[in-house]
Image 1: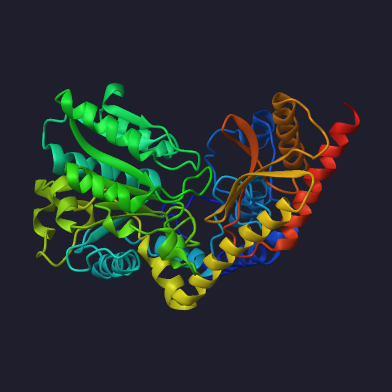
Image 2 (image 1 turned 120 degrees about the horizontal axis):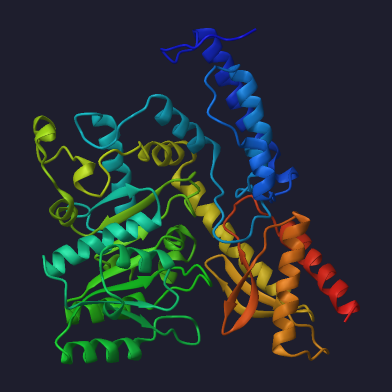
Length: 480
């Protein structure tokens, strides 16, 4: 039967309920069975075009039919980043409560830009940002922050704020410092904000992939002697490559002495402060002027959710506030925060709800236990690798990341051959679709990298993946 167009874009109450149950059932089934599925989706552009390419339809279709098509062809053709054997990049373990919270926020279509539009949404962002300020040791009364789409936007917001506070309108002589292990989003942010290549200093790291202090001091001194303005330093608390934490306390002292804005990119590793020895690992993080953390990584939230924290909330407001005529009636008083004045976005989704509901439901202690488990799992993995004649640990377990390569004792191939072998292992594992394990490059060596932040990943999952790697390595060596 041909359906008629519905200009109100509505379903009946029963149709909405049936449709909603179908969606929830599909999500529940996904959470319940994802570990039994293959984590990797592979398809060519031609295959995807064949499935989806069409003109926008003029006439309506059966809602259940569209949903069934999407579940079969969209969801099944996407990587399962919350899979226990998704080891690469920074996996997104997520959790069901937060997924449902996102559904609520979207279903009610909450505008989370200003107080007048939703006082409750603004208040929950104030409350949850306050939780994070306390976790990271930032000033509770003066401190502030804002939820963003992710770490990239948080870093962009931080650098924009640093530039405004330290340089005012003229940043022609401003210089910014970061290490060669800093996340690429920082470079992107710096370029987006109009800095030239010659205003960026990439400082080499030491043998442990940490900011080289002496080289940094030399660079700052040279720039000052040349009449330039060192205005911002970006340190990393948990690099993507190795999980390494820069010497934060020492860097904070340099920034204080030289009047430099101290930004810490803790998008990956910041959450480790909840781990058993997390405060020791992240010593000095509370000294930052601004800090990026990504709840959609190691705080187990669904995409998208990043966060920027600052020592003084007035810094954000003085950087981003604009007062167009059409917003003059909803400015409110000083205590009623309009978050569109604290960042780049005017229209903002209600990101705070999922963080609030998951912390309220599970309790912070559960998050502490999960993050501690991840760190301990990486350490157990390192012990297994070190006891094997096949594997070499290139960068030890640090904040749940470990880098290693297949380099068996008794065989002495060239470095080029070892690199090629490890690249082959990764490609074969990925093509098997049984695990997501890709390479990175450390000290000019191709290495395999495991990021173990999924609390549902077991040691058996790791062992099975290592066994698969060994199988492909032996297969390759047999034909050489």
